[in-house]
Length: 177
Image (cartoon, rainbow, N blue to C red):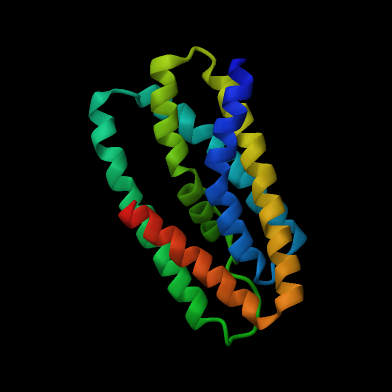
């Protein structure tokens, strides 16, 4: 199997968190501009994080990466709680500014950092892998937001609960798995 095909399958796995979280955010109102900005930012982070991981890849960093999962889990739980308590307010979207976009992109791309460390030990074509990761995650994020919008249109108020449940499950996954 070619390296690029392997990188693509890795990219799909790395993009699932972005897709799931984008699906949750898609249940809130989010403008096309923010959809594009969010998708691009996720793509950029999925390029940068494995590059940084590859640059810093060594035995000592492997001990710290597992602790980052707890931080990501806590962030997802906080977002689910925030979404739960703001569901009665006017729907204007949780993605409100560049900070929330960067936080979103960081949390869904932290696992690509550890993949970058692994790639630095096994591969010489890290840039190609990073490009594939970026394009795939950007696409999955955009698709997730749009699918979340469709779910929101079909199920109206119940869709917010779907988004909350997705965030909650992601948070629990990072904390306990």
